[in-house]
View 1: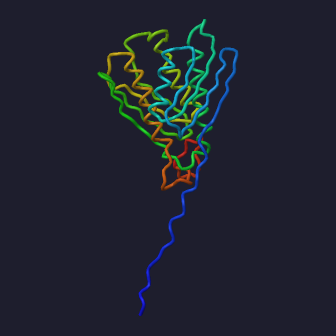
View 2: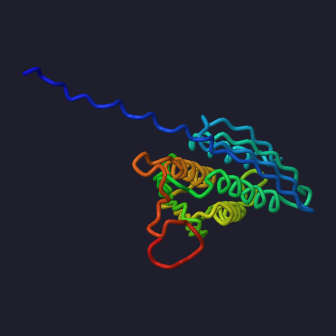
View 3: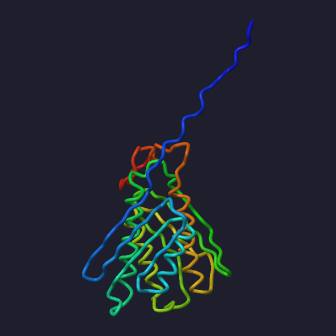
Length: 221
């Protein structure tokens, strides 16, 4: 009897996903902000907020999160850095949320332990669409450059709220204020990079037993 070969059809190519990108414009009496983001980028940053140290921190999100990020901000810096800092966090968070869409296929969770010299910070992130911030970060100095260190909590609060993220940050130890805040931004970048990644085993499934990610605090999320 002639032998027959067990032939199987080659696997179908994976569908090409559209780029997960978004743009946001936020205009108030205090600030005028434009953000463009690509979650599937290469880590390119083009940041101009008028606050040098904030630019440096936002560049960390792009570079270490492999996110392409463009930010243009004009704000009432003659008053203080508060409005520009907070509204930049809002606009970037909104852009992340828009780029994620219904969050189908994402890993959803991410975390990082980020060492920077004497400092160690832990960041845990859930892109649950239920915004919440836990902030356990203390600074030995009141200012870094022109920025009040209390403004960094405002940025992370604004980002978590508008991105729909549950975000926990805790600096376990550290002495240098620059290292402390930079470890927070780099830790967010690494956690975000993991959380927004597409899980190939559930690429077309919303990662929730409810079938949706929303504002409900009910069990089964």
